Image 1 (cartoon, rainbow, N blue to C red):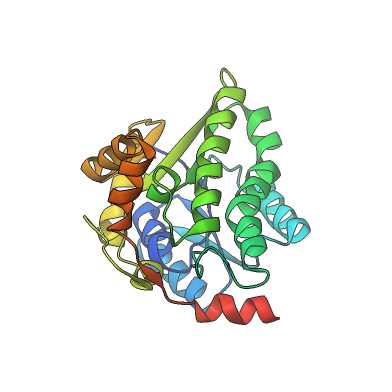
Image 2: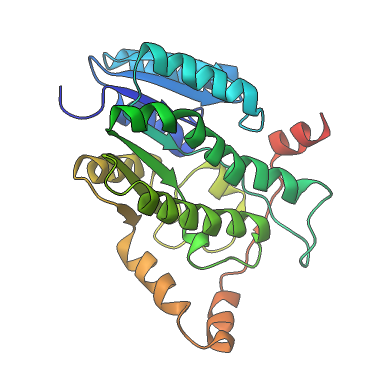
Length: 265
Protein backbone atom coordinates (compact mmCIF):
# COMPACT_ATOMS: atom_id res chain seq x y z
CA UNK A 1 0.00 0.00 0.00
CA UNK A 2 1.05 3.60 -0.52
CA UNK A 3 1.80 5.84 2.41
CA UNK A 4 2.66 4.99 6.01
CA UNK A 5 1.81 1.55 7.37
CA UNK A 6 2.28 2.15 11.11
CA UNK A 7 1.02 5.37 12.65
CA UNK A 8 1.05 6.86 16.14
CA UNK A 9 -1.58 9.53 16.77
CA UNK A 10 -1.77 11.46 20.04
CA UNK A 11 -4.92 13.25 21.09
CA UNK A 12 -6.95 10.69 19.15
CA UNK A 13 -10.05 10.58 21.32
CA UNK A 14 -11.90 13.60 19.95
CA UNK A 15 -12.01 16.61 17.65
CA UNK A 16 -9.29 16.70 15.02
CA UNK A 17 -7.64 13.55 16.39
CA UNK A 18 -10.79 11.48 15.96
CA UNK A 19 -11.23 12.78 12.42
CA UNK A 20 -7.59 11.98 11.62
CA UNK A 21 -7.99 8.43 12.94
CA UNK A 22 -10.94 7.93 10.59
CA UNK A 23 -9.24 9.61 7.63
CA UNK A 24 -5.98 7.68 7.93
CA UNK A 25 -7.55 4.27 8.55
CA UNK A 26 -7.06 1.78 5.73
CA UNK A 27 -6.48 -1.93 5.17
CA UNK A 28 -2.92 -3.04 6.04
CA UNK A 29 -2.47 0.08 8.14
CA UNK A 30 -1.95 -0.10 11.91
CA UNK A 31 -2.65 2.81 14.26
CA UNK A 32 -1.78 3.38 17.89
CA UNK A 33 -4.28 5.87 19.28
CA UNK A 34 -3.39 7.80 22.43
CA UNK A 35 -5.70 9.82 24.64
CA UNK A 36 -7.05 10.22 28.17
CA UNK A 37 -10.66 9.07 27.67
CA UNK A 38 -10.97 5.28 27.39
CA UNK A 39 -14.50 5.32 25.95
CA UNK A 40 -13.67 7.89 23.29
CA UNK A 41 -10.53 5.99 22.35
CA UNK A 42 -12.62 2.84 21.90
CA UNK A 43 -14.88 4.80 19.55
CA UNK A 44 -11.86 5.99 17.54
CA UNK A 45 -10.53 2.44 17.34
CA UNK A 46 -13.90 1.20 16.12
CA UNK A 47 -13.85 3.78 13.31
CA UNK A 48 -10.39 2.60 12.24
CA UNK A 49 -11.44 -1.06 12.24
CA UNK A 50 -14.62 -0.27 10.32
CA UNK A 51 -12.42 1.00 7.49
CA UNK A 52 -10.29 -2.13 7.48
CA UNK A 53 -7.39 -0.86 9.58
CA UNK A 54 -5.86 -2.23 12.76
CA UNK A 55 -6.13 -0.16 15.92
CA UNK A 56 -4.55 -0.23 19.36
CA UNK A 57 -5.27 2.25 22.12
CA UNK A 58 -3.27 3.66 25.00
CA UNK A 59 -5.14 5.56 27.69
CA UNK A 60 -2.44 7.67 29.29
CA UNK A 61 -1.38 11.27 29.83
CA UNK A 62 1.52 12.73 27.89
CA UNK A 63 2.88 14.16 31.14
CA UNK A 64 3.81 10.63 32.25
CA UNK A 65 7.14 10.42 30.45
CA UNK A 66 8.02 6.87 31.47
CA UNK A 67 4.65 5.36 30.58
CA UNK A 68 4.56 7.25 27.28
CA UNK A 69 8.03 6.13 26.20
CA UNK A 70 7.37 2.54 27.22
CA UNK A 71 4.13 2.31 25.25
CA UNK A 72 5.44 4.03 22.12
CA UNK A 73 8.62 1.99 22.02
CA UNK A 74 6.73 -1.27 22.58
CA UNK A 75 4.47 -0.46 19.63
CA UNK A 76 7.44 0.53 17.50
CA UNK A 77 9.21 -2.74 18.22
CA UNK A 78 6.23 -4.65 16.78
CA UNK A 79 5.20 -2.19 14.09
CA UNK A 80 8.04 0.14 13.05
CA UNK A 81 6.51 3.60 13.11
CA UNK A 82 6.71 5.59 9.90
CA UNK A 83 4.34 8.40 10.91
CA UNK A 84 3.89 10.18 14.23
CA UNK A 85 1.20 12.85 14.42
CA UNK A 86 1.67 14.78 17.65
CA UNK A 87 -1.80 16.27 17.92
CA UNK A 88 -2.66 16.26 21.63
CA UNK A 89 -3.22 19.60 23.33
CA UNK A 90 -5.36 21.58 25.75
CA UNK A 91 -6.68 25.11 25.47
CA UNK A 92 -7.67 27.32 28.41
CA UNK A 93 -8.10 31.05 28.97
CA UNK A 94 -7.00 33.66 31.47
CA UNK A 95 -8.42 36.56 33.44
CA UNK A 96 -6.61 39.78 32.64
CA UNK A 97 -3.29 38.01 32.22
CA UNK A 98 -3.66 35.71 35.22
CA UNK A 99 -4.32 31.99 34.86
CA UNK A 100 -5.61 29.70 37.62
CA UNK A 101 -2.93 28.16 39.80
CA UNK A 102 -1.12 25.37 37.99
CA UNK A 103 -2.89 25.91 34.67
CA UNK A 104 0.05 27.34 32.74
CA UNK A 105 2.35 24.60 34.01
CA UNK A 106 -0.10 21.94 32.83
CA UNK A 107 -0.57 23.49 29.38
CA UNK A 108 3.18 23.77 28.90
CA UNK A 109 3.67 20.19 30.08
CA UNK A 110 0.97 18.71 27.83
CA UNK A 111 1.15 20.83 24.68
CA UNK A 112 4.88 21.41 24.43
CA UNK A 113 6.44 18.87 26.76
CA UNK A 114 4.15 16.03 25.71
CA UNK A 115 4.92 16.54 22.04
CA UNK A 116 8.67 16.63 22.65
CA UNK A 117 8.49 13.49 24.79
CA UNK A 118 6.55 11.63 22.08
CA UNK A 119 9.09 12.62 19.44
CA UNK A 120 12.06 11.70 21.63
CA UNK A 121 10.57 8.28 22.44
CA UNK A 122 10.38 7.32 18.76
CA UNK A 123 13.17 9.33 17.15
CA UNK A 124 16.18 7.04 17.79
CA UNK A 125 14.56 4.01 16.15
CA UNK A 126 13.10 6.04 13.29
CA UNK A 127 16.45 7.68 12.64
CA UNK A 128 18.20 4.30 12.68
CA UNK A 129 15.77 3.09 9.99
CA UNK A 130 16.33 6.27 7.97
CA UNK A 131 12.75 6.97 7.01
CA UNK A 132 9.46 8.23 8.44
CA UNK A 133 7.56 11.42 9.19
CA UNK A 134 7.18 13.44 12.37
CA UNK A 135 4.13 15.71 12.07
CA UNK A 136 3.61 18.33 14.78
CA UNK A 137 0.28 20.12 15.14
CA UNK A 138 0.63 23.81 15.92
CA UNK A 139 -2.03 26.49 15.63
CA UNK A 140 -3.00 29.85 14.17
CA UNK A 141 -2.34 31.13 17.72
CA UNK A 142 1.32 30.26 17.22
CA UNK A 143 1.48 32.76 14.35
CA UNK A 144 -0.78 35.43 15.81
CA UNK A 145 -0.84 35.06 19.63
CA UNK A 146 -4.29 35.43 21.14
CA UNK A 147 -4.78 37.73 24.14
CA UNK A 148 -7.19 35.27 25.72
CA UNK A 149 -4.91 32.26 25.22
CA UNK A 150 -1.66 33.21 26.93
CA UNK A 151 0.06 29.91 27.68
CA UNK A 152 -1.70 28.13 24.81
CA UNK A 153 -0.31 30.69 22.33
CA UNK A 154 3.14 30.31 23.90
CA UNK A 155 3.09 26.52 23.54
CA UNK A 156 1.96 26.63 19.92
CA UNK A 157 4.62 29.19 18.99
CA UNK A 158 7.10 26.95 20.78
CA UNK A 159 5.93 23.93 18.79
CA UNK A 160 6.41 25.82 15.53
CA UNK A 161 9.97 26.67 16.56
CA UNK A 162 10.63 23.12 17.77
CA UNK A 163 9.38 21.62 14.49
CA UNK A 164 11.55 24.00 12.46
CA UNK A 165 14.63 23.28 14.56
CA UNK A 166 13.95 19.54 14.39
CA UNK A 167 13.57 19.67 10.61
CA UNK A 168 16.94 21.38 10.34
CA UNK A 169 18.55 18.93 12.76
CA UNK A 170 17.29 15.93 10.80
CA UNK A 171 18.18 17.28 7.36
CA UNK A 172 19.73 14.48 5.34
CA UNK A 173 18.63 11.76 7.78
CA UNK A 174 15.79 10.46 5.62
CA UNK A 175 13.20 11.66 8.14
CA UNK A 176 10.67 14.34 7.31
CA UNK A 177 9.35 16.88 9.81
CA UNK A 178 6.00 18.51 9.07
CA UNK A 179 4.51 21.54 10.79
CA UNK A 180 0.70 21.52 10.74
CA UNK A 181 -0.88 24.93 11.33
CA UNK A 182 -4.68 24.83 11.36
CA UNK A 183 -6.98 27.77 11.83
CA UNK A 184 -10.28 27.32 13.62
CA UNK A 185 -11.71 23.79 13.61
CA UNK A 186 -15.25 23.09 14.73
CA UNK A 187 -14.45 21.03 17.83
CA UNK A 188 -15.50 21.12 21.50
CA UNK A 189 -12.28 23.01 22.20
CA UNK A 190 -13.23 25.74 19.72
CA UNK A 191 -16.84 25.74 20.92
CA UNK A 192 -15.61 26.90 24.32
CA UNK A 193 -14.23 30.06 22.68
CA UNK A 194 -17.03 32.63 22.86
CA UNK A 195 -16.01 35.02 20.13
CA UNK A 196 -15.18 35.22 16.42
CA UNK A 197 -13.90 32.05 14.75
CA UNK A 198 -13.49 33.10 11.11
CA UNK A 199 -13.25 30.52 8.33
CA UNK A 200 -13.95 27.69 10.77
CA UNK A 201 -13.77 24.24 9.12
CA UNK A 202 -15.12 20.86 10.16
CA UNK A 203 -12.79 18.27 11.71
CA UNK A 204 -13.37 15.98 8.73
CA UNK A 205 -12.32 18.66 6.25
CA UNK A 206 -9.28 19.52 8.35
CA UNK A 207 -8.28 15.85 8.47
CA UNK A 208 -8.59 15.54 4.69
CA UNK A 209 -6.39 18.61 4.16
CA UNK A 210 -3.76 17.24 6.53
CA UNK A 211 -3.81 13.75 4.99
CA UNK A 212 -3.47 15.22 1.51
CA UNK A 213 -0.59 17.46 2.59
CA UNK A 214 1.22 14.53 4.19
CA UNK A 215 0.75 12.42 1.05
CA UNK A 216 2.18 15.24 -1.08
CA UNK A 217 5.28 15.57 1.06
CA UNK A 218 4.61 19.08 2.37
CA UNK A 219 6.90 20.49 5.05
CA UNK A 220 4.17 22.88 6.22
CA UNK A 221 0.43 22.26 6.07
CA UNK A 222 -1.34 25.52 6.92
CA UNK A 223 -5.03 26.23 6.38
CA UNK A 224 -7.26 28.04 5.56
CA UNK A 225 -4.60 29.77 3.49
CA UNK A 226 -6.32 33.18 3.44
CA UNK A 227 -6.63 33.25 7.24
CA UNK A 228 -3.08 32.05 7.82
CA UNK A 229 -1.70 34.66 5.41
CA UNK A 230 -3.77 37.42 7.02
CA UNK A 231 -2.48 36.42 10.47
CA UNK A 232 1.12 36.29 9.25
CA UNK A 233 0.78 39.68 7.54
CA UNK A 234 -0.96 41.25 10.53
CA UNK A 235 1.91 40.36 12.85
CA UNK A 236 4.26 42.28 10.56
CA UNK A 237 2.38 45.54 11.06
CA UNK A 238 3.50 48.02 13.72
CA UNK A 239 2.55 46.67 17.15
CA UNK A 240 -0.14 49.29 17.94
CA UNK A 241 -1.94 48.51 14.68
CA UNK A 242 -1.62 44.74 15.06
CA UNK A 243 -2.86 44.94 18.66
CA UNK A 244 -5.85 47.06 17.63
CA UNK A 245 -6.81 44.54 14.94
CA UNK A 246 -6.51 41.59 17.30
CA UNK A 247 -8.60 43.40 19.92
CA UNK A 248 -11.58 42.88 17.61
CA UNK A 249 -11.14 39.13 18.02
CA UNK A 250 -11.16 39.03 21.82
CA UNK A 251 -13.05 36.03 23.14
CA UNK A 252 -13.98 34.55 26.48
CA UNK A 253 -12.76 30.98 26.90
CA UNK A 254 -15.09 28.77 28.89
CA UNK A 255 -13.33 26.36 31.26
CA UNK A 256 -12.85 22.75 30.21
CA UNK A 257 -14.54 20.55 32.81
CA UNK A 258 -12.22 17.62 32.08
CA UNK A 259 -9.11 19.76 32.46
CA UNK A 260 -10.38 21.39 35.63
CA UNK A 261 -11.08 17.97 37.12
CA UNK A 262 -7.71 16.50 36.12
CA UNK A 263 -5.89 19.52 37.55
CA UNK A 264 -7.46 18.76 40.93
CA UNK A 265 -6.53 15.05 40.90
